[in-house]
Every structure is written in structure tokens, then in C-alpha cells.
Length: 603
Image (cartoon, rainbow, N blue to C red):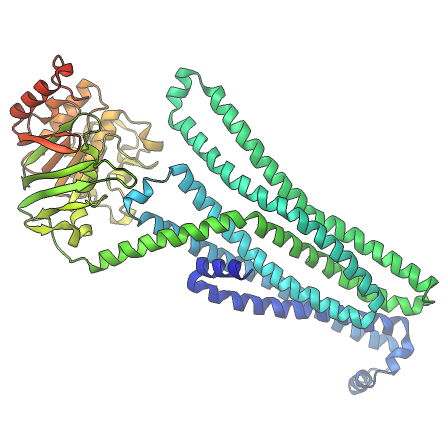
């Protein structure tokens, strides 16, 4: 249990200090609940036994002071007082529940934002090791785990206070009845605790299967064309069917066990009261006048006792159900925050530099090996690039082109070597270096938003520079497209830009890089997925940037690189040739005879 609280405290961070205030609010609410139960016994006895009122000296002094003489008037006053106490109790209970859900919602929000913030700031190599479905499911499950554990923990604490307070009141009323109730509740609790082990197992199954389920759904709709053409819909349907069955069975197990406490407790309390009445009349020789106040107290206590006991058991089961998700959240959060802190420390220690007015970019003996791999992806790569120049990078699949781009982009840090700008390492000010770069990949990432927002990617509405938008539209020849659309620049592009052609998406990608005014543009196979006509149009758009922008281009087709000042040929992570377009193409053709008939393409 101590380990559980340690995890909760770490996950909540500084906000864990809000928990004691919540508990205090619920203690006050619980005490008012108990007061409501305590006053029922004496009130019932006063109403049923008028002579009992005469024995209460303090109460009679109040009546005398208020000049209340008749029994009926005294009962009216007492009834009003009892009603006011009960009303205050209800209002405090409502307020405490509102406070509970507001506070838990606030804490839940803080944790999820903290988790997301840590994830988006961890090193790139950590993110690429996780699937998008796994990340999505983890954040969603963490959201549920925090809410369930926070509310359950507070419900257990406050209802335990209420439960023990009520039991203390009941021990003063009838020990016999109390013993019967405790005995029955103990049996119920142990039985449900045993069932709780199934709930814990069901929680793990639900989390794992939901992660697989999200992955299958993403794959199905992400590759919908292939799914439809190949005709493998049934395959994905069966996968989803099997996963959903396991998820539903797990949730059904939890649902059934969650309902059992209420059903069993209510039936048990009724049984106990019947047994008590029978024993009192036949064995203990109690008369009905003696039983009425006792039964009144227990009736009112039972109204609060039963729900409190149910909530405690349900909350314990919910904590068990979410224990796997909570453990995963705790371990993952520790891991990624450790990486995040290291990254933040590096950024804080970084020098503030402006690389935009650089003169020369140099890669100096850059080497990189992926974690877990024994084979280097890059080995001693060196080349220089002056501002305004363009360089092309070619090589067969697996040559290390994309790894080299990731290193240049600052996403991967080389094991050996350095990237220098005017003789200074970019790793002393990596954020400043990345602010110099624009990246145009083969598949442009577009959000499900307007063309305008996709060009000004990451810029809030009120800060978008419309004049700059108009300028980059002209530079990328997107004006005609915008003019043909009914909503113009405000046109929604659909999920991943599905409503646009490949060429239009690429132009938006180039426009995005130009909008953010980056000095160096990195194009990673930016035209390889396009048809020849569209590729020519995009190539012309890229050529128009030559001399004005510094370009680093990975190309599928060699003709895309004709305008480059130099071309680099990579093979198995090594730079084997650097020279003019003609020199490197000649080397490439002689080296890879299998492609001699198609010299314009690189496989």
C-alpha cells in the first residue's frame, strides 16, 4: 500500500498537496452525516415517548427561554432543527462532491498535460521506438487511470471515515445488532476481495487489447486503399472482433463485480434487521417501544452505511482494475521525465546563437549506430556546404541517407564527429540550429485543418502573417489552386490532406518551410512519390529556390539533382564519392550496372 501511495505522489507531483484539503472537506461532510444519524434516535424517542422530553433539562431550558410551552410546539421546533441539520448535511455533501470532481479533474488535466509535454520533448530515438497506437493508447489509459485512482482513493478515505464513525454511533445503540452487521459485511468484503483479483487481471487485458485494437484500426484506415484492393477486410474484421470480445469480457467482469456490493449489502442488511427483530422479541424479550428508537437509528445509519460500504468496495476494485495502467504510467513517466530533464538541462546549458547568417556548414567525421545495432549506419561522413549552395545525396536503399538527414536535423546526435557552422558545433545550441532548418519529407504531414493553418504550422490564429502567406503561395505557385477553391485559403484539407493531390500536398510542404523563413531546406525524397508531370512542376519550384536558399536534397530520381552544386554518393553508411552531378552519376552508373538502363533513377 505504501508503494501505491508513493506512485500516486510521484504522478501528482507538487499537486499532491491538494489531497489533504480534499480529505478535510470530506471529514467535515462525514461528521455532518454522523450528526444526522445521531439525532434520529433521540428525536424518534421524544416523539414516541413524550415523558422522555421532560428528562432533558438542557432542552427544556431552551424551550423555557423561547417561551414554548405545549408539546406540539416543541415537536415542531425540534423537527425544524432536525430538517435544517439534514439540509445542511445534504448541501455540504453536494459541495464536497463538486469539489472532489473539480479537483480530480484539475489534477487529471495537469498529469495528462505533463505526460504529453514530457513525451513531445524526449529525444527523437525514444519516440521512433514506440508505435503511434501504443502512445495514443497510453495517454488515453493514463487519463482514465488518474481519474479512477484519484476519485477512488478519496472515496475510500472519506467513506471509511464515515463508515467507522457510523459504527461508533451504532455501538452505543445496540452491540448485538452491530456485531451482526459487522459479521455480514466482513463476509461480503472478503468474498468481493477474492473476486477483485479477477478485476485486476481484467484491467490488464483491457489495456493490452485496447492498444492492439487502436493499432489495427489505424492500419485498416491508414491503408484503406490497399485493404479494399487486396480484399483483406475480413482479416481486419476478425482481428477487431477478437480484440473487442476480450475488451468487452474484461469490462463485463469489472461491471458485474462493481454491481455485486450494492446488491449483496442491501440484502444482507435487511436480513440482519429481520434476525435482530426476531432475536430481540423472542430471546432478549424487548418490547416494541424499546426497539423503535434503535431501529430508527439503524434504518438511517443503514441508508448511509450501505452506500459507503459499496463505494469502498467498488473503489478498491476500480483501483485493482486500473493498477496495471497506473504502474505503466508511473514507470513510463519516470523514464520519459528523466529523458526530458536531461534534454531540458542540455537546452538550458546551450548557448544562444543565430545561425541564420552562417557562411559554411560542415559535417566532420560523423558516425552513428542505432541502439541495439552492431553495424554503424553512418561512418566518418564529411562534407562542406556554403550558404546558398545546394547538395544532393543519393544511394541505394539502406545506404544511410535518411539517417544522415536525421543527424543533420538534430534529431539524432552522432556517436562520433560533429556538425559545425562557421567552425562552431551546432550541439552547443541545437535549438538555434533547428530554427535554421526547414524540412520537406516525402510524405508531407498535414493536420486536419485549413490550408492556411497547415502552411503556418504551429502558429496560433491571431499570429498568422497573412502577407507572408500570400507571398509563399506565389512562390510555390499555389495561387491558382487557392483561387479555384470555394473557401480559398480557409479550405479544410481533410485528414492527412486526403482532399489534395500529392503535388498539392508537396507544394504546401514547401510553402510551410518558406513561411517559417528557414535558411536551410532539407528535402527528403520530396518528389519520389509523384508522377512525372507533377514531379517536374515540384522540381521547377525547388529550382527557383537555388541561390536563395541553402538546399540539402535526398533524391529518388537523379534528374532532380541536376541543379545541385555537388552530389554525394552514399554506400553502406560511407561517403564514397562527392563531386559534380556528372561525375557522381557516372560513378553511380558504373557501380550499379543493374540500373544502367535507367540512369535517371535511384532505387
